[in-house]
Image 1 (cartoon, one colour):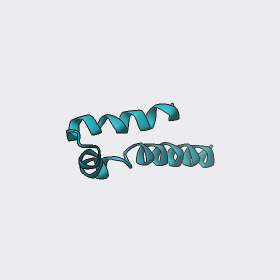
Image 2 (image 1 turned 90 degrees about the horizontal axis):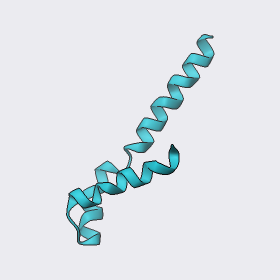
Image 3 (image 1 turned 120 degrees about the horizontal axis):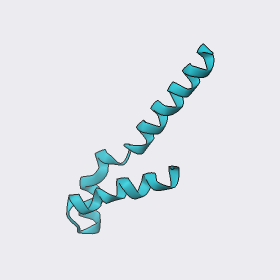
Length: 52
């Protein structure tokens, strides 16, 4: 049971990390698209929707 639990914990951690991978580049994306950073932050939500 311990091995399965460790694997599940790793998968949850990796998924959470991957979902937040867009956040550091939001200012660059916003300036490239000529939009506000809050609008570009919606990209993070859109990026994670296919994963669910």
